[in-house]
Structures are given as structure tokens and as C-alpha cells.
Image 1 (cartoon, rainbow over the protein chains, first blue to last red):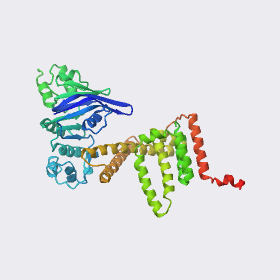
Image 2: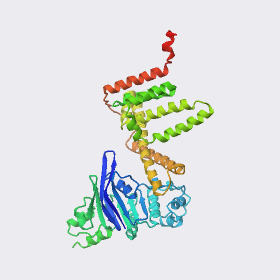
Image 3: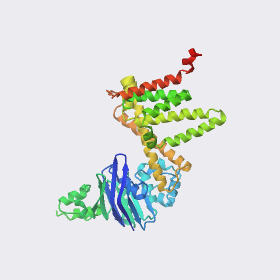
Image 4: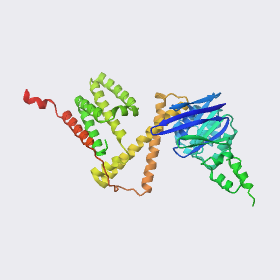
Length: 231
Length: 217
């Protein structure tokens, strides 16, 4: 199972993005500045953006889901129960997991952005997709919820691609990618990727400077690396 | 057209001319064809198609019940085209600058600020419509009548939330009323020519043509 981008190109007014690379099974992190084209690449990979050139091949991928950055724009149900059903997710289970028990008849738009994001992510993660694209999944979540999301991402099979500029709480990833100057670059696998990666999290940078390089970018790996520092 | 004062005045004049009579609408359409990048506009603003369909529907209803449907369709279509051109050419702060130039630092500033916020809101709604369409496709829903109601609710909810945020930001910054601004405008000779012809369109639309030829009867 893999998704292959062969000089896939997107053009918008005076801006363009070209992407090449192969995303195998596992968790991939795509980072880049705001406006660099992360969301556009997510749309391209989901087949929701017409390519101006190149191609995207999805070998053996039968199901794909894209989670957008703004959960309120994906609301189609009048109630939380209907909203869960619109994702094909069991309402009772989802509401229980997200701390919204007893609110099944409430409007999704009455929830705060954080609550709605939790409900949205729980609905998305309730089904197994071969390819899961997560556009800024950590936005609007507190530290506890970010950690829970990292666990859910790590436990998933298939291909998971995270498009984010989150710098603190991240899951263990298989490969790191970066978008800069309209081009997608494969930085490689951690820890070797840190040398080529411009968006290295500050904690990783500090540990590297102290001579204790974390094996990966998750909180667990960073903590382990910190514990290795003598004194 | 570079000068927003001439652009806004031309759009107002042409809209009034088009609204008043069919021959005014035809003259305004000719002006639109000569002085705007019409083909480029039609390609860029896809929203014009559903608007024209909506106008056609109401025109048909009007034609059936009162018989003025065709006239209504022609006049409204031209007004939509002019509005589309004005919206497309408008740049941020132009309404504010024009309003302050026209009405001063107090009433002008307030009015311009409201217009700027309205324009900003329209841009946000346009972006949100695109995102909602993508979201519906992700869920396997067709973009149609069924998707209109939840989509509309989200847009209205979003517009209210943004309005509240803007009000809070203005209050935090100590805004009460009015403000200072020194507007600068760039006027090209082509702008003056287009403005002159817009006035001509209004003149011919509002003054009955027969008045010119009465002496020859």
C-alpha cells in the first residue's frame, strides 16, 4: 500500500506547488510555514484538487479520508447524533469518548471549536481508512487531547499523513517531509532527517545541542533523550 | 480602472441607469463590454452563473404573472454584471479611502469601515463556500439543495462569529467613532474617459430619447 506523487503540480493564481515522492505505510509528517501549501497538498493527495501537471498513484488504496483544519465547515448534521451518523460513526460511542454524553440532541455549532474538533477526530478515527490525511489535526486541542490524538495516530495501520506546523506534541513518525518555496522535500527518517529539516521542534534542537539526539519526535522519545543527559 | 471614486460612482450610475429602463440597461451593458475586462471576469467569478439562474427563475415567474419578466431579466443581469466588476476590481481600504474623501473623518470613516468589513466578510464567505463544498465531497454528499441548508447555517453562523470577533477587536483597540485617514488616489486618463461615458449612459437612460427629436416632428 503506497501513494506515489510524480511531479504532481498545483497552480493557484501566482502560486504553485510541485510534489514528488512515495508515501509508504506508516505515519508521515509534512511541515511548512503557514501558506506554504500544506492544505493544498492534502487536497491533491485526497483527489480533491485538479492537478495542473504530473500524477498521483494510489496503489492498493481502497479507502481515503481527509480531515480538514476547520471542523465547523464539515458539519452537515443538525444534532450531534446526526453529525456522528454522517461520518458513519456510532453516536453513543463517540459522544462517550469525547465527554459529550447527554448532548446528542445539541447542535454541533453550539460546541466550542475544541469540542467540535474532538468530536470530528473521534468520528474520523472510528473507521479504518487505508489513507488518512490529517490537515492541522492538533489545532484547537489542549495538551491532553493532543497526546491522546498522538496515541490514536500511532495505533493506526495504513498510511497516515499529518500536515501541521505543531512543534511540541507530536507522534512517533516514519518519515518527515517539508514544503518550502513551492516544493515538497523528503527529509528522510528521524533522527537522520533533523539535519535537512528546517522545522525541527525546539526541544529536539536543544537536546541535539546537548549531544543527546532523540530517536524520534514524540514526547516519549524527547523525554528519553533528556534523561540520557548526564547530571 | 485605478481610481476607486470614479469606479464606485460609475457602478452606481450604471446600476441606476440599467434599473430604470431596458435601453439604459443595454447602454450600460455596452459600457461594461468596452471598459471592463469582461471575458476575464466571467471566467474568474463563477458565482455569476447561479445568480443569473436565480434571476432567470424570478423573471420567468414575473413574466407568467405580470408580463414584465424579460425586461426584469435584462435589467437585473446588467446590474449583476456591473456589481461583479465592482466587486472584482475593489482592493482593500478603497471603500474606506473613498468614504473618508467624500464624507470626512467621522461619518465617512464609520461608513467606510462598515463597507470594508462587509467586503471582508464577503471574501470570507466565498472561501468558506469552497471549503464546505470540499467537505461535502469528502462525506460523499452532492452539492445541491440538500446541502444548501446545513451549508447556509454554517455560513450565517460563521459570519456572526466573525462579526462578534471584529466588534471585540475594535472595542479592545478603543474604537468609538470616526478616525483619521489621508486617502491618496491614482487617476488615469482612461478612468476619466470611462467615467464620462458612464455619465452619458445615465443621461440617455433617464432623459426620454423622444425629447431630442421633438423639434423634428
